[in-house]
Amino acid sequence: MANKLIAVVLTATSVLAMSNAFAAAGTVNFTGEILDAACTVDVGSQNQTVALGKYNKSEFAAAGDVTAATKFNIILKSCPASVTSATVRFDGTPDASDSKLLAIDSSVTGAATGVAINLMSANKAQLPLHGSNGYSYTLSSTADNTLDFYAQYISTATTVKAGPANSVANFSVIYN
Image (cartoon, rainbow, N blue to C red; front, side, top):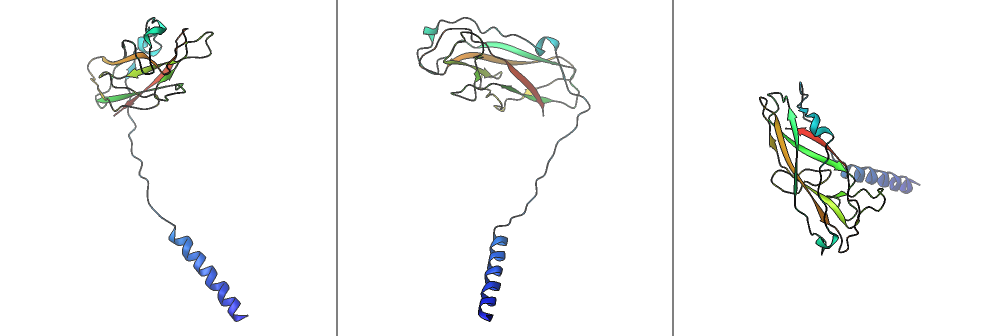
């Protein structure tokens, strides 16, 4: 009986020792700042329409073919002096074949398929949907700030079906 009791005690001790061997500790530090005010988005930038143009489906011979880039901008006004730069994030429905691209609205009757919309920052580097490419815009507190972007159609399949190729993206300005 004493041997069984010793075996039970040793087993319990070894289980407790093993559970402590897998424990770890650390800290998570959160930093940030609450701003007095942020920049104001110009009324014309809030709900704008960007016309990407009309293209023949034959212009998309292979997946990855793109159309000309169309420039658009977001204007920020009345930026406080404490806010000197910003990045912009676009959100929307990601394309099924490439989540960095904005999907075409398939709820529209006869919508185009095999294409998506590629968003780019001022230097024409891809601006992935739901992310950032690291491009930072310098802001002025004494003038309006025009943040340039580009958009273009990109084929996501070898076969493109013609039809309306519309979509919607929301944007957020992240101040640095």
